[in-house]
Length: 427
Image 1 (cartoon, rainbow, N blue to C red):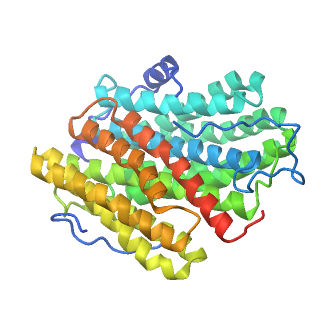
Image 2 (cartoon, rainbow, N blue to C red):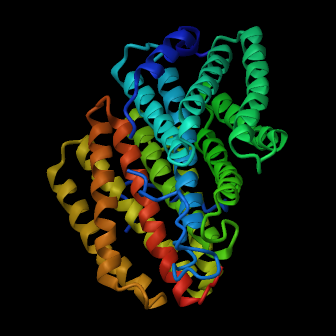
């Protein structure tokens, strides 16, 4: 066994104490080999029914209805949950289970802030369910901690116990949801959680074993949450009579872009963090694997655009890959204290915003080029802040990365609005 794993010892109870104690809601790169091509604060929305709106009389655009906004919000929060859980557990593994390490504490705090935000989202619709939901959600995170500990220390009994606990949790969580939203059968909710549990097991196993495909596995776990969000949003929308169609084409476009754009930030942050941890060794298997996972997301995003605008798929992919390269250059400049490289990367990203806005406008005239360019300003600045925190080994790195990811649902909403208007999508 790897020496860092034999020394890995972590108290699940201590992690739960830490978690419970957090109550804040909340061109090509220099020296970077061309990656392989492979397929593969949250916006504020009202989730309460407005009597003046109805699916038949509302003038609200189909991608901006209460139901569509709810689905997008839950997609963002639930996807963040997987990324933050995976990153917190991976950070603990990297730090040999030292719960006092500032980065571990910071990662746990960021994860719990997401749990609080998710509970508050549920509570905004069902006030009495907020506290029970939060307690239940925190509990299942603790079981994943126990699973990670068992895997890291090769304690088969602890692994089996964690698996049994999570299996039982699915049942209790299904019952909790059904007690609040009768439209969602308890057994169906429990069944829906199976892929969440199994895919996160696979990611944790890859992390503990130091596998090159860890980010790919974590990405698969996060991708499943879009389906969970759709199920939960569908039940809530039906229960509360929300305006709009949760399963409609417009809502699906917005949710898909929300999932993919959020994943872009997490995968970019994780790839850059992996490169920093491995001292810029671009041949390190974990660095190569993280870059591959990031590029798979770029390909998937380009395919989503291409499914609506076939001629735009290749130009979009080339442009998207280019801006990732500029972020790599920025990271390398920060890591080596090369101010000229940092300044060049900033200038390149500033110019990129303009060219990307022009590309989008050429495909979707409803979206002005300057407005698209302006929308990218927060994306660039929040990711700069996250990269700076990572390079400086700051405790709030995961919180900064969360802020960067949580801007993307707004970008997704803008792109979706343009596509829906341009293609006259009615549902």
